[in-house]
Amino acid sequence: MARQEKTSEPKTGVAGWNESTGAGGGRPTRGSRRNKLVIERRSRIASLIALLIVCVACVVCFWPIKDTITRGLWLKEGVEVVTTVTTNDGGKPSADELNKAAAAIRERLGATGISEFSVYQKGDDSIAIDLAKSEDASVIAKIVGGSGGVQFVRSDELGDADALMMLNAGGKAVPVARDTYKSFMDGSSVSSANVIDAGNGSHAVEIVFSEEGGKTFAEVTKELAKDTGSIAIIVGDCVVSAPSVSEEISGGKVYISGDFSAAEAGAIKAALKSEPLNLKFSFGKATEIGPMITKNGLWALSIGAIVALVAFAVLSFVRIGKLAVVPSVGMVVFSVCMLGIMALMSRVHMFTLTIPGVGAGICLALVTAFALWTLTTYFKGRVEQGKSIRGAATSAPRDALRPLGVPSVVVGVASIVFLFLPIPALREFGLVAIFGIICGLVAVFWYGVTLLRLLVMGSIQADPASWGIHIASAENAVEEDSL
Image 1 (cartoon, helix red, strand yellow):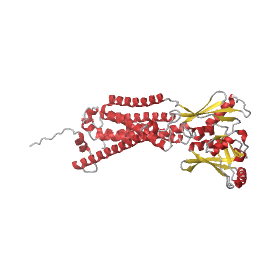
Image 2 (cartoon, one colour):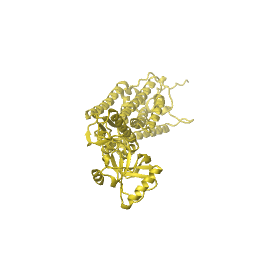
Image 3 (cartoon, rainbow, N blue to C red):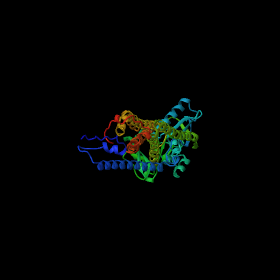
Image 4 (cartoon, rainbow, N blue to C red):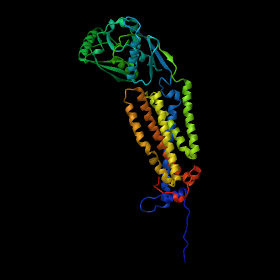
């Protein structure tokens, strides 16, 4: 008697997944396949929960943004210090002399590592120095905005009574009239200068003298130690320190200290190592200035970013339906992580957001958006071309993102190199680019790939049509490795 052959419909959903999943030589039991699927699903859910916790921590870290992320001169209020320039005989400097003075000040500020500043001529005898608003901005402007170089003067030979009074009151960068003192040593006796960490958030400048300079300094301090005198250290046109001398200082080394910030110490180093200008500088009072990009501009920038995210989400939904949850939410993850890292680095005084940084952030946001879009559309397209849903989800991260591999490595290496260049704009660009690469990897792989594979294990496998995926025929699907 002939036996009727059983026919079966192609299985979908979890049943279809279980039917084609197996390892080793033998056919795994239904129970073992189900357990493997449950464990895999739980691990991906746990991964997304961990990412959610990270994102919440980032929000807590950067909120409110206006108070947590340090911004540079273009994005926040600043301080302007105007210095009036005269020749040694009190006359008006020539245009060429004023140009050279402004260029020297720019060079000194660049050497301090300050991210954003502006130095420009104001009238025919003045130079304006604009810095981001901070406690030390006025001090830095006065140190770098003078004639440069360093002078060592016995305090008992310093005739500027006002300067001495301000020094005794604990003043920093006290302006001093050049014709009120005579130095016993100058910058020609200095071999090197370095900024060092003095502890408790304070910094100092270590000065190493030449052999002859060390001998002269030892002789003067030996004499001053008899009556506990002091030495005024003048950088440019300001007294930056006036330490008391209680004993001979030998060894050819001295420290300029005074509870300086890292930027103040960097300004002292930059000014004393620069070539002195044969001009006189007198400083006006520091005045506050608004951001170069106004508050309206900042609001426009912020609203523009939000509008761009919404537009990207809408476009994604129109083109790929419910799968838009992968690229659109992925960009939210990217943005939240970027802001969190910036706020965290700002808290430890290692980051200031500047225009180059904004540019780097925009560039990496575009790259991340492209990667998320490519990942999702590649998966959808390969399934509709006949590849299995699971196979497409497995190969999508590898094949779709492969073209971005080499450019990403190049950008990463270039960003690291930028961190070591003496150009503040490039350093800031490189630092934010590194932040962007890290956040992009989080958004694409930790969020995008994990969510896509989790969806494939459930609702996409069970009902592809509801996700906008149209499969022509089940026979054309090519089964590949399980996720």
